[in-house]
Length: 299
Image (cartoon, rainbow, N blue to C red; front, side, top):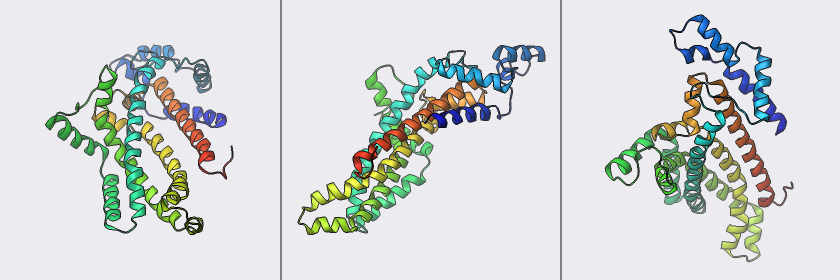
């Protein structure tokens, strides 16, 4: 993880600077004089060499001093503290909804292979994958928020119960694609594993069908499912900008887009590095989980 993070810091630092535009000019406006822009560049440290700027960035990473946002004029650490909780809660709610939907439906479809229920579930998953998340979010907002008034149509709240209530519709919107992919994966894994020799051998020993499915089929299904789930959690963390924009949630997704458009180097660098660390940690946890699911895997 250490060399990967080191390479990521270099890529983050260089690629953000490939975006056209001068941060100093964006801060002062188009009518600012060249002298004022140059003075702002000196104040922001943009007049130094790339190597010097990178060393300042790395020093801030190790000291947890990620600098000050150019756009928001606040410490990047304070911005992350305010925003990361919203995205983290949204990801948790979406993941819980995905697990609640995917495991029963995927297992049921796999057990009833090629029957009407299996075809119906597969058709529904294909439809869920095909629908854009912003369109689904708007439909849910209009029906459950505007017409029925069951959930807020957007924004954030102060109390925890109201925050959970505000995340119901965004969580459902974001979980549809993940649920559909997990359902298809679980269904295919159940079908494939059920036809393997060791499953037939377990049945031939007189083990009850319930135990065969739980101990031999379902447990082995979890291996590939955990891999896909980890990939989807990473996608939920990094791709929450659309849902956060539709439902006006103050998360890191909307912060990322605003920072990129305004060439806010310190904020973008810190956000991408934070997401990269989360990705590596999630992959590490999945690797550890493999050792519990599959006896052949050792730490």
